[in-house]
Amino acid sequence: MALIEANDLRVEFPLYHLAARSLKKRLLARAAARVRTDESNRVVVSALRELNFRISSGDRVALIGRNGAGKTTLLRSLAGIYEPVGGRIRIEGAIGSLIDPAAGMDMDSTGRENIRLRALYRNLDEAAQAALEEEVVAFAGLGEFMDVPIKGYSAGMLIRLAFALATAMQPQILLMDEWFMAGDASFIDKAEARLATLVSGAEILVIATHDMDIARRWCNRAIRLDAGRIVADGPVGPVVESMLAQTA
Amino acid sequence: MLAGPLPASETYAFDAAAPRRVEVARDDLRKGLASWRLAWALARLDLRNRYRGSVIGPFWMTLSTLLMLIGLGLLYARLLNMSLTEYLPHLTVSLVVWTIISGMVTDSCTTMTNAEGVIRQLRVPFSVHALRSVFRNGLTAAHSFPLIPLVFLAFGTFPGVEGLLVVFGLLILLVNAFFAAMFLGMLCARFRDISPIVANVMQLAFFLTPILWKPELLGEGAAWLPFNPFYTLLETIRGPLLGGGGDPLVWLAAIIYTLLLGAVSLSFFARFRGRLAFWV
Image 1 (cartoon, each protein chain N blue to C red):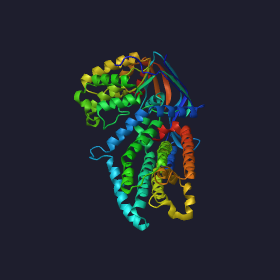
Image 2 (cartoon, one colour; image 1 turned 180 degrees about the vertical axis):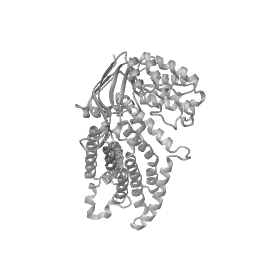
Image 3 (cartoon, rainbow over the protein chains, first blue to last red; image 1 turned 60 degrees about the vertical axis):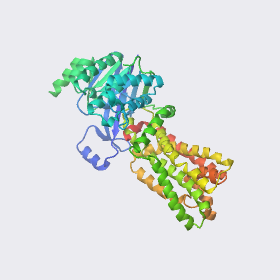
Image 4 (cartoon, helix red, strand yellow; image 1 turned 30 degrees about the horizontal axis):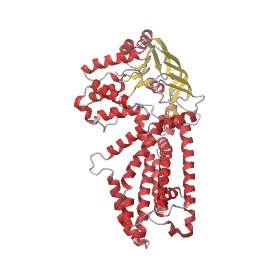
């Protein structure tokens, strides 16, 4: 059984490499609600504030909200990359994250070498590595380009490889950003079929998206974020309606 | 699609009220060291990419060390009034080892910032990046080490049985490189002014450490040398090869410095591990 549970989850971004004092003055003068100075006098952005939710097996959750609402930050926190400054988070189940397609890719290596590299990132043994390679080569359909350094790839080819790599294994919890709708027409059909398998095989899906059609189509629950807070959480229909009604 | 779920079903839990930092850091180290194959593959890629298109590749390091040796060797043997047979083996070992030490320290500063893409996207133990830096520098070092036996052969100086101690000297060096990569890697990610400071310190250390000159030239002042950590590190390799095994005091000092750096590095890592993703 997969499970994601957050209690009072709070994530803050420190702004280190900016001229703190002048920036502080400027931002505080505008009485910005999300930028503040913390106990140790640093300028921080509250990316996520007091989030409470519980996602259990069978939930297909769409994270919706405007740019900067905290969708990707929440995905990264769920993936265990951003450590919260407050509250608790608990995730049970193997996580597969499709957040950045090019994560861990080496532009100077060939497609095939990148597959091996990814296998090492995932700690696969020899047999699993060979299986992964065969599977990715077949799905990406790049033919002879598999042995060309990927910096010579077109954007579409890169997406194909990245997508094939990222979706080759079935996670229990699938975290996804909406980058995956690229590629040429023939690939989109293939990609959608793969995604459908992946999504139905996963116990939990969390997807950050701007596209309400994607939310309606893939999900049964929506969490709407605004300025780092949850403003609505419930069945996908009503939450999306409320969002559309407000932004329209 | 591949059959079956991802191999390990795992639980990730974090409670900001009880962060269990030591446990998390220990886990990171354990998993990081176990992923040495990943670190090794990445290090080899780094080397390949750095010298892509170059005909002699990493042997440029060997060549530049060799040129330094010839130039400095001829000049300083004259300046210091020593014969080449006396001076050149000393200079060779010192310069080769110093190039490695200085390369490792400088490289440490970019260990984490260079891995930014991975740190912000994938959950990979951070110690893998430190290990990668150690391997990368170890591989580079392996290209200039042959200069030492070459010069020894040319001048007919051969270490005795105590030369085997060099293995421990190299081990101490690698352990230090790992701790330095962890500590400086994180520190330089947080404070971007540290790398130029480190570069300056290393330049100064080059002249303060007996590399171009021999410790004996310092006379009574040589007693103070063990306070220079770089000297002790250098001496645990140079001692076995040239000095009949090296002073036990120097070995002790080198081990103490290693333990100190390890303690500082690991506590810093344990305390700030969770912040690294926000720093890079």
